[in-house]
Image (cartoon, rainbow over all chains, first blue to last red; front, top):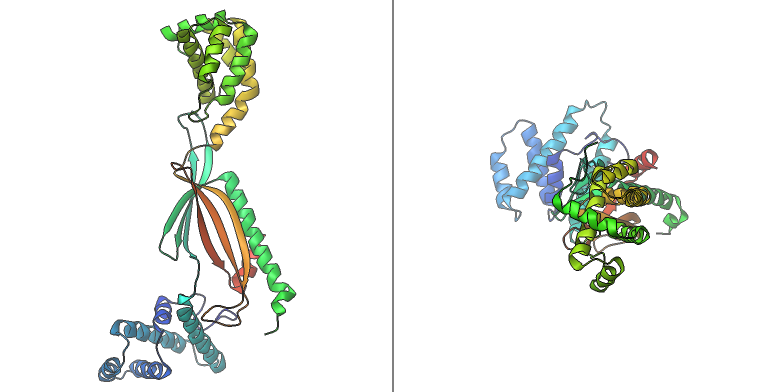
Length: 190
Length: 190
């Protein structure tokens, strides 16, 4: 999905993302059963009975199942939209395989130790017009608000000089990462 | 320009005392006061030093306090209005300060003033401010859920200073880039 433009287009739709999150503990057999139900539904058949029996016979809570069904439905309907001539079967299969792999990886790595990641970033530029010490201060500064993956919000001001420092360091990280990708250290024998 | 010092009764009294002080001694006094201006919570002179000053300038405690306070006040007003040295000199003469003292004020202001204003502009308070930026670039080789990774990831450490407690708290953020976004970002940013 990251190497060529997949049939899903640029962004992954939310139903598919939430399906990914809910696929943990879902075995191959259940996955197939659910897929069959979705296909029948797309074909126009009434599958309420089948769905009920699948739901009852599985240990997965109904809410999670519904996320998975919604995701599958989205995947398949998106695929169907694309005319058969354009959707190469091999590429489609590969996309699906990668999707499944990626979702499993994401689900299982949730328990690994990790630091919070950046989920949302907002900023604004303020100008201090005057203060108790200065009638005309006219000092710009950046206000940043970060939402982290651990749910916390961090809000702080960044004076212009610090902003330059931040910018410089981030550019340095990017450059180092880029160099790293090209260096022979990545050719460590597997 | 509107006058920055209103000639109140206490100003008149202070000016009279200042006019009795030897000009060289006053010049040194002024430099010391400017240095310590706007430094939070610190007294310009210790109690001992004040006693010595009383003797050196032949002023009693009340007079010395008034002189020190008024001198500081004049300087604070000069900063607040970002007044030009020539204007300051003129206005001081208008409140009947001797011209030699007015000149001393003006010279001290000309040399130390701009830096003082800059310092204040940089120090505008904010509840939380970014204090420092540091980072670490790692190559993740494996984790409990996944073997044989070769995943570059960076940890960004942002030191955020809290205005009240003067303590700096660390914000650690994990950054991961897919190879596609890395190339894109590097070419745009670096």
